[in-house]
Structures are given as structure tokens and as C-alpha cells.
Amino acid sequence: MVKTINDATKPKEECNQNSAVMLLSHIGKHTYHTIYNALQTTETMRNHMDQYFTSELRSQLKIVRRNMANSK
Image (tube, rainbow, N blue to C red; front, side):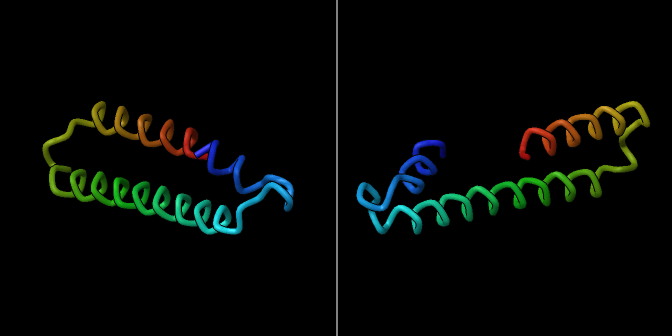
């Protein structure tokens, strides 16, 4: 991803016109996978909610918060 951003932000004389398209495509795919994984996790939690103890839910919440912080 860093290479794609670097390529897309080069000066105009060095920049390939397709680099902006590649950057947007990469960001779009990354966003899609992030949302897809969040929905899968939500679905799993909803289907198995009655099987979790409060401590396990708190642990999952910490993981989700950490992942959200890392994605910013």
C-alpha cells in the first residue's frame, strides 16, 4: 500500500496517469475487506451471543477496539 501511495504522489513529470486509479482501486479493495470482516465478526457474535460469558465479550470488545485503532 505504501508503494502505491508513493507512486500516486510523485511529481507530474514522474507520475503515471494510472497510478491514481491504482491507488483508488487499492483503497477500495482494502475498505471492502475491512467492512466484510467486520460484518462476518458481527454475524458470528450475533449467532453465538448466548454462548459467551461477559468476560469473553469484554475480551472481544478490546480486540475490536484495537483493530479499529490500528485501521486509522
